[in-house]
Length: 85
Image 1 (cartoon, rainbow, N blue to C red):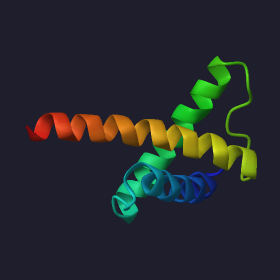
Image 2: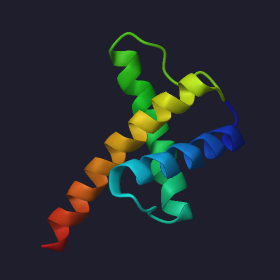
Image 3: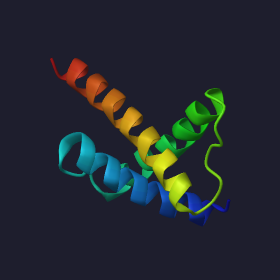
């Protein structure tokens, strides 16, 4: 997958993941970054459980990326809340 495809997939996954986790986005840049990281994490997790990871720009890859983005966003919020105390 090209860098542009990862950015597009990351943007969509980060946006959807942000809406699921905290109902408001983290900002466009942070949504893209966390979405791309989430796509990688989701692909890794799916590979660990024997399923295919991110395979391109398709619905399956979007679902994998969104699940990964949710995991990354939950961890991100745990760290941010933990350091804000």
